[in-house]
Image 1: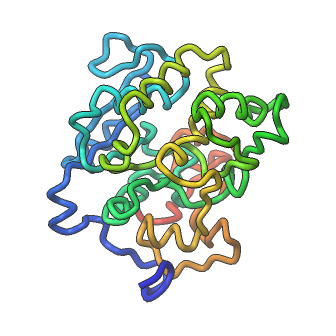
Image 2 (image 1 turned 135 degrees about the vertical axis):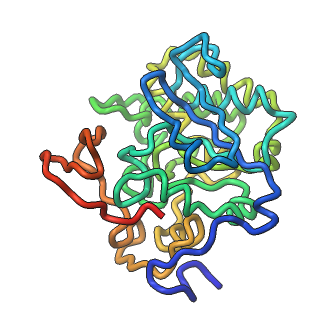
Length: 293
């Protein structure tokens, strides 16, 4: 069965992976601050190993050498420290259940992760946990055309070429880089180990030492993970195929390559209202747009 075929509209394939999926270790690596709450992962995914990093607490059980480079510092630190004993499947995610970039009609991480297809990850090795193209695809960064350009809004295009040449020495700088935002993805142990430990240590060293602003260096990493794990510079599968393969949501209506009806709408603000999803943007009561399961 090909992506988007053979399953009723909006139907879901089980993401448990059967006996094979149950036998393999699955872990989440979470980049968080002390003010953020990731306890919902324990509640709903008790069998997954939890690695909750506190980037702003040097006394935390799991922390980083320096709070720099956004979630990239956490992800690299986990890989470096656990390279020889990695779980079979690793999901690299942000902490809060409700986040503006979560690929769900209510921006809810719970159904997003419940739907996530571990068998597909094990087949592919690397999977971005987001299908909508809004922000990131089809070509968020143009390293050659945008070299030296600095916009008011955070954008890594002006610094990407120089950073790429350091991160991927000897590789040709791509004309375009595209992947759906926002640095939430999964990788298998085997895929991670296709790179040696020294590569990850070198990338973390760059994050620690670069003079780029924290937001820019983190953005550079955000638009590099897919290449680190073997994808082409532009990795933007159609939303229809992606939703079916990554989340088991097949038969969706998708009039555009980058979006499907009723799945994701770019919100007006990056901070969701207090009380979301039952309180809307103007303080009004609202119902969920989709179920939790």
